[in-house]
Image (cartoon, rainbow, N blue to C red; front, side, top):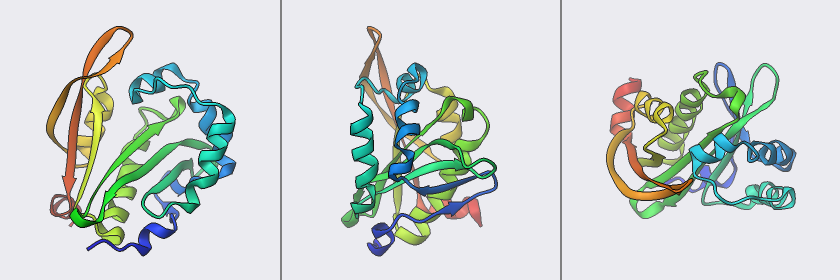
Length: 187
């Protein structure tokens, strides 16, 4: 059963090198700057451009959401914005939800992603009460796929030719992890 109160306020989750904090207006400039990175946009399939004002509005409304969790990933050492993570698409009837993550270029390839994912999974399974967490990753994003597998996500299938990028079509891979699988890894 979903614990709806665990979705009302986004908590701060602290790891060894990072902390997940509620995404707030103070993060808007860093989020906006991260969206100027062509490689980050390719990895996340972000075609659309956003204005700073749109990002400011988005960040300012996150605390009002009670059906998702929006986190900023911050370095414990510097407090610097390292990326974002969201648990969204929560289906209380089926105890499932999706998630997405993006990292600022300087923090990619350092193991920050798996650390953030593990913090999020612990909260999603133990506090929110989800049974299933799923994600989508593009077939060319090998580093992300390996990180997801390292965290226990299993490939379920693919959506063929789901992304058009620079005139070429790519498949989207569907991955998930179930609470019992996660529990077996952490016990």
